[in-house]
Image (cartoon, rainbow, N blue to C red; front, side, top):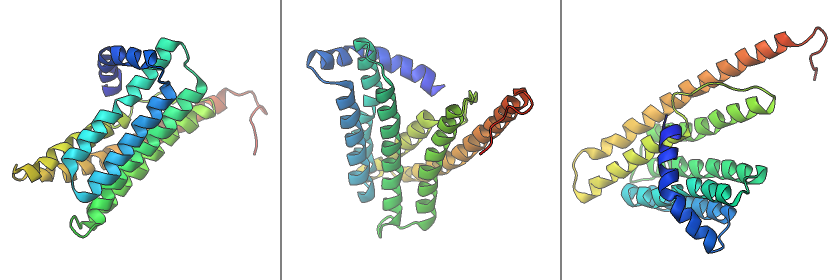
Length: 221
């Protein structure tokens, strides 16, 4: 739902900015790289220090590059397999940096909480595997028709909103830091459910595809 409606809204809002970058001679690939670099820096510099508010502000500013680069490519008529590959690959890098930064905080002396460190690592790993299952299923010719419970957009919104609000604790807002652990557990559970949904879907679609093959027409290997 977030992918469908939020992307449509922000695409309209960011179209003039994308057009400006094109006039300045900036390429979509450059925007992708700069955006990912900003997200990684924001996550791995601020989060391990417990600066969740400023880290989230930095990440949010750069995360919109994911919409700007695609918008630029469409305006230029340059949508390409390379651009899609680069964008998808760097999305995984950005996601890993966000949850890796949180894991580093919980592993540190000040934020010491081994259980939440483990939950953060699980969020990192499960997010990567959820994306892989869809990509791998599609690469073997399956449609992977499933709307997962917690996909990338939901993982980012839940995590970043909770991180940003939790960071207000340093500005004197009491008790609000509890939002981040709750969000991490929600993302972890939702990612697990989504992973199961995709695996079950791929298994069903693979069985249907194999059943439709003529006798002796399957591949071995």
